[in-house]
Image (cartoon, rainbow over all chains, first blue to last red; front, side, top):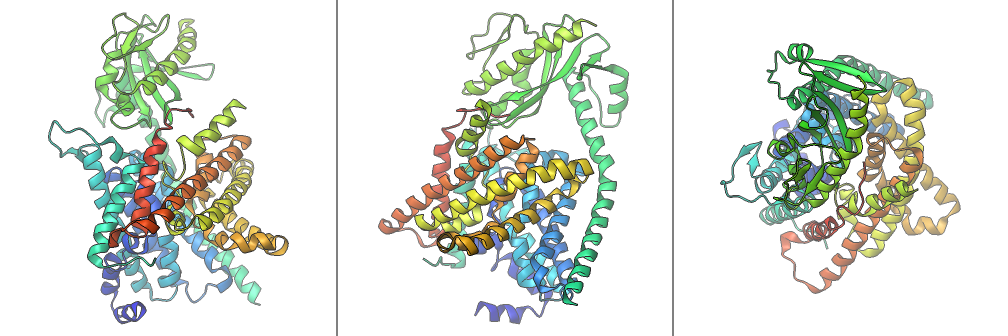
Length: 209
Length: 190
Length: 195
């Protein structure tokens, strides 16, 4: 059923993007890429950098794989995806080091871990290897933005409660005591689980048990 | 034939991405090195409390600071014969790195800046706040610096601990005491 | 020796790769529904993580650094990981059929388990020696297994007796359990210090 709907909507690039934003949102629906989703969301700026990085890698991997889709020999398919993804991740990493060294230091090794973010490999295999370049790039953009806004929402909650700020600006009243736990690992688990609870209830997604 | 096709494909793909990465590397390496250099210079100027702007950072640094290398250790000397150097060690959650500066008497602290730390935000993490680091100004590191429970610092080698972060305070005390002696002895020879 | 022990304890408890660095979460969520699968995945992770770190260290320090190609280490590491997973799978199919039947299905999943790549990246970042790298890799994987076992065991019992809200079922509740366990692990903080 879901596949049929997708086929219908695939006709238009824009609609493809909208699916990525809500119905197939990588984090709350497919539960992919939560490692980095949890780890970098203690501050909004880190979440934005991570979201932008993942979106960039998604779009360009989609471009590469889609352009090469008729030439890639089936046997080296996965390796090709990996080389492409890893190369774009290196570019993101160098770019952050050169222009945003502070953010790079904060999210350090997690940039490299974009490689194992299953969203990217998943989209390359499921979409880009079968579709036109423009549609694949729109799909990458949609999924990337869907991933990013989820990270930013979680980060807004964690940063405002954990540090009393959003993007470094004070948002909490003066007497506010920071919830230290929110800035640390347990806070990430709690906020994401509550986020999942809310979105899944609204979207009516049920877990197969 | 099939194998040949695979080999050609992999070679082409590999060379394409290698070229791309070499180009990116060529473009970003100088910027990255410059960033690190600037970061170091900023921290040194900060610790000496010399004001600067983004534009004149390099000039101010070269006018005010003399860099001395000795036995693989790097010292920064200001015009008024104050000295600064890097210190590092382990905190509770990860490494702590910083720069410490001494007055010309080579035993009282002029200032400390923290470059890197991973302590608990809001508790041990306050170690990098200027407000806390200001407490170290003028304190003597001989015979040894002591970080004592909050509000109890009296003697000239005692500093208040961070409230609720005994472990971080202890680690910080150790990392200062472990390194300053050796560095100061070296620079005194000059 | 004392140093190696410190690294091991840090990797298992205070710097647990799942509960403080939040790594390896995809399989963590997917597999912590039953204790048995969690156990199988845990063993597979211990094996692959230690093996790949042991291979990646010499490649990085003896080939990439002397040749000045540190830039491409992401690519090299991920290929080594994919290749060694494949190799382990083939060896198991051939010689350890019993083992293959019990946790062979987890092997292909490991390539996308970020713990494996993360351990190799941390090893470069913290410039560990060869021995320290192996101890760190083994410890991290043991820590990951410990975390997934605790969460899976709690989850298994919890599902039998409690009425969990619909939207929270599955990943949501696993995340809450993991959060509480992560809080408990914070208590280990300061037990050992690493540089």
